[in-house]
Length: 229
Picture 1 (cartoon, rainbow, N blue to C red):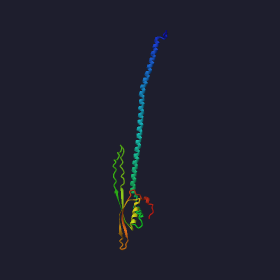
Picture 2: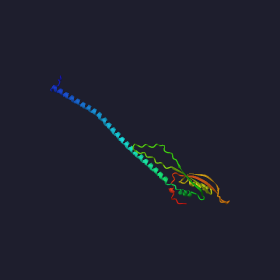
Picture 3: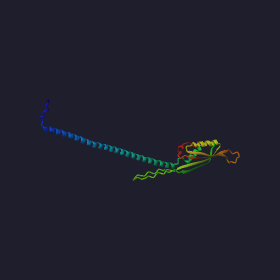
Picture 4: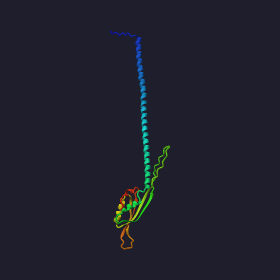
């Protein structure tokens, strides 16, 4: 028959040890619970700080991009103003001098062709105003007035000449059509013509009329170095 082990420790000591163990266990559980609650608070707070920092970084990048865009717009506006000024200056400086144009028309004439009359007429061509509204100036900034672009001039040349044959007229028309200074070359008529010399055997020639226009972008300075015929 087995016997229970004899406990020589006092009962109050055993109870006190059991109470201490229970207290330590309770304090440990309490520390774990408090740590969990603190972690649940700190981690979302850190995540929110990271999100706010990222948002601030994105806002800074947008601000820098907007500043660069404004600088590009200012540079583009300045380039446009300079181009307009250059066009005005170019208009004041005659690109195709009349003496150069006459020399060029003479050089293109085939042998046997001559002029009777040569008429130059110019008129301003109205260009439509842009429909895009002007951008409003920001507070404290002056709104600059757009530079008025120079009017586009249309120069029409009407030439009446004489030739011995229709082939010479056709050759002159071909040369005029290939000219870098002219456009819209058209033959209005080509008819028989007898010179009024009083002689019955005066030769029968071809009188013709050609109308053409000077190209708006024509620049005769490249032809100035060509030798005269």
